[in-house]
Amino acid sequence: MPGSRADLAGANVATARSFCAGSASPECRFVDAPVQLGSTPTRVDGRGQTFYATSRKLTFVDGLNETWVAPAGTLTDGASIPKVFHGIVGNPTSPSFANAAAIHDAICGIGNEQGQVYHTRTWQSTHRMFYDALRVGGTDEITAKVMFAAVYLGGPRWGVNGYRSDPRIANVPDLEMETAMRQAKHYIESDNPSIPRIERYLDRKLDIMFGRLDGGRDDMDRGGPVYIAD
Image (tube, rainbow, N blue to C red):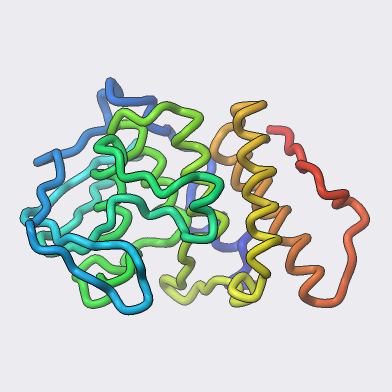
């Protein structure tokens, strides 16, 4: 039915697509990079980290030749990784992450709710763009995939054009989310799966966790990684 992950994936995100291979990808690029930040720190209620506003527009072109913009004034903390995963992924603020984080934050970051591009794309395409932007920014493939998994699993999800996200994700206990992320990190580091495989892997993990929330039980989950074939 509309709103399910299957519908969203089919309707809003093309599974067969080109991903940016790295900083040398001819079809992928930043415009006006690196991101320029103002000098005045900003605090956001309920958040421990410090945010800065971009002082000029930053543009990114992804592997589908789609253009993404972080307008001047976008608040960013330079990371975008959900707090629950900082102990696993870290809270990176490397320059190689900064451009990707600014574009990602413009679409779905805290403090940008009134921005002109906030939630104007689907959450799936936004998180995929984050992976592309990390690669173009110089992040190695495995690290970028681990960071992508973190935002896909625990990052924001929202509805666009009548589609909505499953609200149960907010009710999954942090410990379960952390366990799933640790397993995903191991899976990525061991197998280097494609982005679509990582998505299917994480969707399966979420289905298992949702089943437990609903009082069900999935005997296929034994606490270890669930490996998904292409």
